[in-house]
Image (cartoon, rainbow, N blue to C red):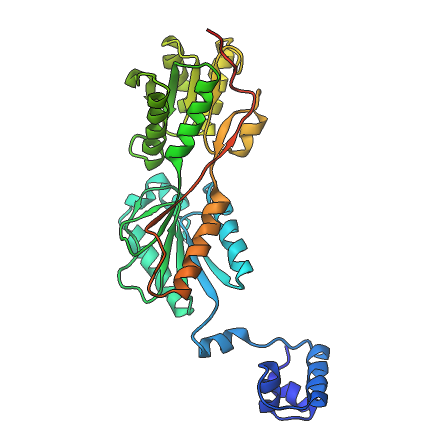
Length: 346
């Protein structure tokens, strides 16, 4: 790539003149401007924006730390971050910590977790990023961000333990409430639940939404209709018999993977989903639309979480006093109504 000195030499002008023309400064004549611009075009010169921005302490770059890009939620979140940053002419510097691969699904309890995050944030600071978005693999209370950082931080798909760090999270509770209200509207009153892990924030919020929908539908909450899985297909399969024995007419699986296991077991029991019993999931994983029948589910707004994270971090950069920036932003889920819920007549 040619340098500004080479452009100046080829144009027969000084380096200062070329610099002024590139930056729309100075008083160069129109003929000189045209000549220099022609040389720039012919030599395919690109200004060194990074060097320029470093001088003004404005690199137009955001550091993005992903806990593990192999976890299903993260690619769409990163895509949302990228889309908004492109719109605002910001670049992202992406770091993939690969924590799930290294330490399994309990990585956040690993004593090295915080040290790994701090090390990567320091690396991003050395690259002059203006802000950092930390993208968790699942929602939980997050305490890994160092205190007194010189740049703003936003936590995506998780909850910060400090009010000065905004959190962008999915509205699980509202999503579950809407989903159960739909099942109730189809005439089902005895709805069993295959929940996720008890300690999961996703489980707790979705159970809250389930209970709220029952309350508003004047249906008594029965804790005996709640069984706990571990988000895996086998746990959906394993827990289905318990709910069938309790004569539920619908099963709410807290993710689509467990719903797939419920489909497997109901098929073995000669019960048809969408006819003999209703099944709904959560997440809207790709496989949900290919189940037989296609699974009614509540889609996670992953792209919107990423998009909102970029909106908030750039708003913080333009408003150092953090005015009009909330502690937590909830992004609404999206329902996907398919053929797995039958209309029940008393």
